[in-house]
Structure formats: structure tokens, C-alpha cells
Amino acid sequence: MGVGMADTSSTRPGGANYAMTLANDSYEWYKGRAIRSRRTFKAFETAVLVISSSIPLSVVFFSRNTTIPAILGVAVVVLSGLRSIFHWQDNYLRFSAAREAVEAERRRYLTGTDPYGDPATRDAILVAEVTRIEQGEMNTWLEVAAERPNSGFTPTI
Image 1 (cartoon, helix red, strand yellow):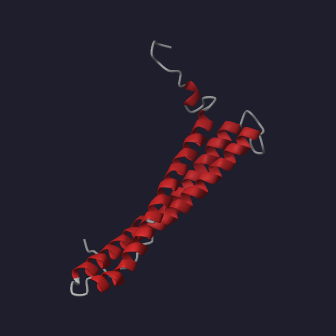
Image 2 (cartoon, helix red, strand yellow):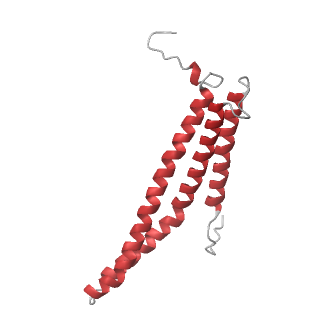
Image 3 (cartoon, helix red, strand yellow):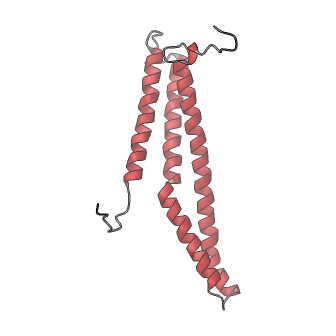
């Protein structure tokens, strides 16, 4: 190995630690995305609640000015629209489920529980299971993304 070159053979496909590195990376990715989605979902839900509840209050304090309640109403509509576009709650639930599924596989792998009892096949099985989990989560995301309300508009080409 040349000077300054790191030994990455253990993290390459077929390397001794590749399967666990893949599982760990997948777990951390889903964990980070679940936390971010949960926080975003809660922030938007809180904002919608606070802004929508302030509309009647703004009418009381600014009864001669309809601009403020109108702006607050627009903000609620925009925030609600963003919520339905980005599916933060759905993402949080999907990412959490995938994270826990990867964690279950990591635990079985580390303890040598079936199907990870055979050292000759355990790495390949872990890679296959993590890939299956990731593909399942991606397929669920595609289903969520495909659920678009029918606006009645059909573009013509």
C-alpha cells in the first residue's frame, strides 16, 4: 500500500466489514432523516395551529384592517399545502420503521442469530436484508409520492 493511502479493503464489497458498515450507514441515514422529518412536521403543525388560532384574535385587535387576517389565512393555506406536498409525518414514520428494521438485522448479525449463524454467508445475508429494507422503504415512498389529488387538470402534450 502506498504512502498516504488508507486500507479500505474492509469497507469495500466483499471486505470483512463491508456488510456491517453498510448496515451502520443505512441505520444512521434513516435515523437522521427520521429526526429531521419529525422536527419539521412538529414545527409546521405548531405554526399552522398558532397562525390559524391568531386569525380570530387579529380580527379583534385590528377590526378595521382585513389585511392582517387575510395574510394569516394565506400563511395557513401555504403551510398546509407544503405539509401535503412534503409528507413529513409519512417520512418520519417510514424512516423510523426502516431504521428499526435495519437495527433488528444488525442485532441478529452481531449475536449470530438465525439467519446469521454461518460465518460464510452472514455478510451476504446482511447486505441482502439491508438492501431489501431500503428498497421496501423506497417503494413505499414512491406510493406516497404518487398519491396526488386529482385537480381535474390534465395537461396535453
